Length: 515
Ligand code: BG6
Image 1 (cartoon, protein in one colour):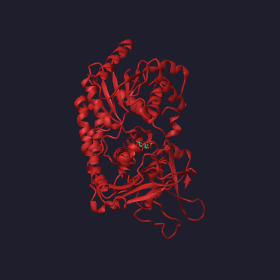
Image 2: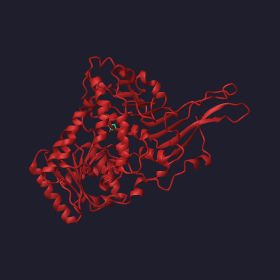
Image 3: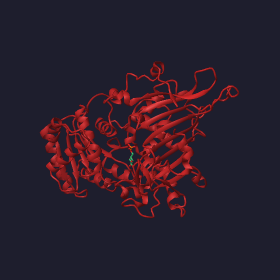
Image 4: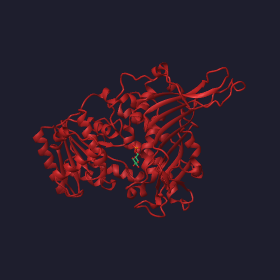
């Protein structure tokens, strides 16, 4: 497909004055103690600590802030500092001077998650550091542990007084996904968290929401006059939201075997993408107004008809195959996975939003591991022209218009439309008008974890799940999971697909809409 790159088209997608959310909300937050539970784990080394370091480098983390790693492993401050130094070197962002400054405020506290004494000791140490640095006493507790201990930690934070806020200082709890395993467990977890923390103190993370292009969907839809009038069933034929990955289950089989793709990707990331594409315009760009509208979308999702389950849901599991020229094992051959596992690693689900705007428009939602490409993309396919006056005189197919939102690896929005091929004959070809966000960001953009931590410190819940949204999504997905998991013929409906392909045959029609 050709690309139109004239300056006139460039101007059509020229950047506005307000490009980044932070510009609207202003500067670095007040200093705080960032207490990371599960600090000996992978998430802290790979994502969290590098994100904090980058925030510090960019002037978005107050240098008086303290980072406290908390975990069961026996370690002292020096050992923890060595690990974090290594993490920065691995991420290729180590800077000696900044590290010297940051290492002084980096501590480790060994703690068994159910030991009241050890929480009391943590409270005491935090109080001492805060007094020494005069940092105001703000506290952010980040749960980067296995989800099974979320409730226990929250309970003990409450009992030890660490969850208490004052007029001057906040205490916030950041919870990683998965938030529950189904609707009843999500409700039970929420009840436990609320015994110690109020809703405004709880930040339920979805790192997809912090991705630059995902955030941009709202601006694109509601900051422009031209798209909203056609953003409905009258002009849109279908919507595809896809997130494909090349990686397999890696070292996470223990978690993934119980989660599968529906819990791992649909209950959170894919539902958030769907809601941003489908919501009604909120009255204000304000966390609760936006989240109110999202919940309305989730509540409007048409419950799955059990007799049409197989028509609207394709589940798959990767078999052996070749990814990037390398032979890779089948899911059932991965370490920690049962040789007879029926956990799906791929799903394609067709959802309908039963409201005035979207009646009858299929939302095809797809995600899978060990696919051909890493690609997170939303495709809005518009309806065909109502009447083609060119049908007898022109050559070539009149492909429908498409709006493509690329979230990863590209950050771009493209509009595809028909144009005449220059020359004497009347021929059509589809062309693309594209705006690339990454070209413009040039180092000013924040990665998803930087954005998440920054917003927690600022107390902005816009990019976080609210409990009613979590429950509405579980309310939609739990019956589907029950149907898939409880039926005796689950294996029969699990389509194997070769690693490195685009998933099971049954979903290829939807995959084609992506390109
Ligand atoms: C995580 C899932 O939430 O998202 C992983 O648990 C998945 O299984 C990851 O690999 C994908 O995130 P991203 O940002 O790489 O698309």
